[in-house]
Length: 237
View 1 (cartoon, rainbow, N blue to C red):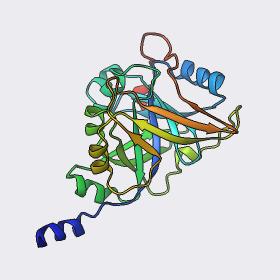
View 2 (view 1 turned 45 degrees about the vertical axis):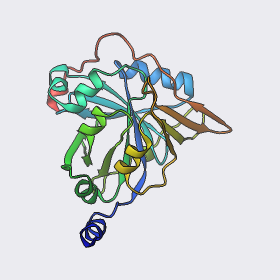
View 3 (view 1 turned 90 degrees about the vertical axis):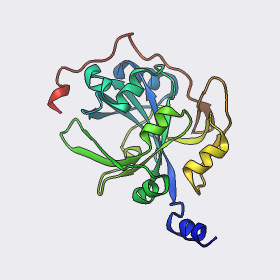
View 4 (view 1 turned 90 degrees about the horizontal axis):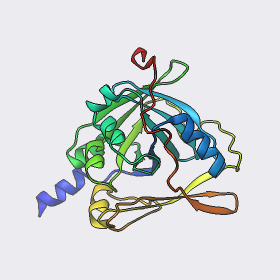
């Protein structure tokens, strides 16, 4: 009994602050960005390159969250990275995964018994955006589970980036994921996130946004041409 009490005290579930972002793979960032703006009235900004993952992204800022449009730009690097392979093998144009933001990433790693992995991307202006994450491997293996992220000290949150959405300001309203609810609760620990969970055969994830007086779900968008987007200067980042 005392052992269980000590363990509960030592590994008390850390605070999960918010849903950080939704991962949406596409094959062509420019095509996907244009479609997002045309269909939803949502603008995006260039994010940067994840050189070691072989991917690049665009950010759709939603204030306290964001949608990450992400594409493979270096197939060779992506083939040797968990995240890159996840994106490369996903169905383009459909929400694939999600991340939760925490200010206690070290405690998350201890609670789950998982390593903390540093990450970074180079912005178009040459700045380095850094973060630390836990559980990316598990999220790629178990659809519905999020990974955890803590942004580097002084790094501006991407969801707060200035973007003028033609349809007006938008927010992430709620998220429905296909996963066993008990498994998700054990994974997240104590939280107050706007999510619902239930297993489903198609493993579909529903992302609902609010914009003005309307609510809508992000549906499949064209991912662009059938080949991956390539960048001639990817290896310079």
